[in-house]
View 1 (spheres, one colour):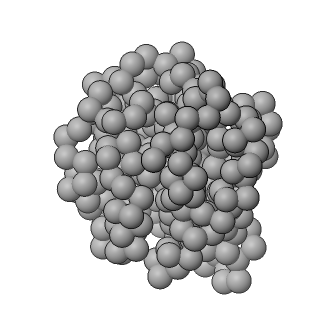
View 2: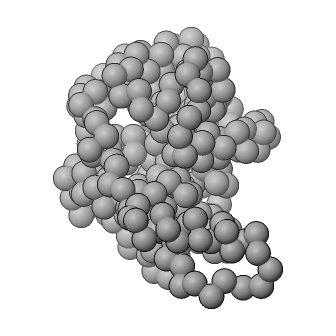
Length: 298
């Protein structure tokens, strides 16, 4: 049952974090258990996935089931070929030599094509557009050519440099979760779109622009206290993005969120699929601790 608290509506801004994004499901689970449901949603990267599915009508239990059954085959489809490996080696060699390279280099835009991930998202969301969603939702991406923030939503949002209104929800999630160098960017309407976390790991300003009075930001931080080493190119690029954005995120959230929930899941890598149930539980615990303050704000 939905509990009506005060006169203020609240929205969730769900942050990036790879598999750690399953914590957002725990946050939603805790809110619903206390009779609270966000009126607005926004998300970057992993947060975009959860925001889109929840806004499309998936229940918390269904989201938990999808997350628990997630595996690498639904995400990874390598773009690496022998030609691209040769081109990479040749480009590095030529960079050390004077003059321009005479070789026609064919470097991929990312290690992962993104077609498998897009196909999986389509199986869940079909061709839905933002006007079809059950909750007002915005998803953040970035045009890697210009640095402009690109929001996907049902209507124009002044909080972003560009708003794409006619795109599908799948296109939005695919764009927002395209970690630079890991996933190939999504080319759409003349834009080259990558992970929204490049500019805002937690897109609070989009939640306000949708109409929220109170914004709850879920900041997953970065995996900085892992027991295992960051030991492959995908992990290195993802980890670097989160480290670079840590201070920026901290500054943004100080000015743009009434409440920040930090599950502090620092010890999970992109390969720890078996730990997803634990991640969901840790997100739930983090939100439970903040419920009293949220009730005061509302």
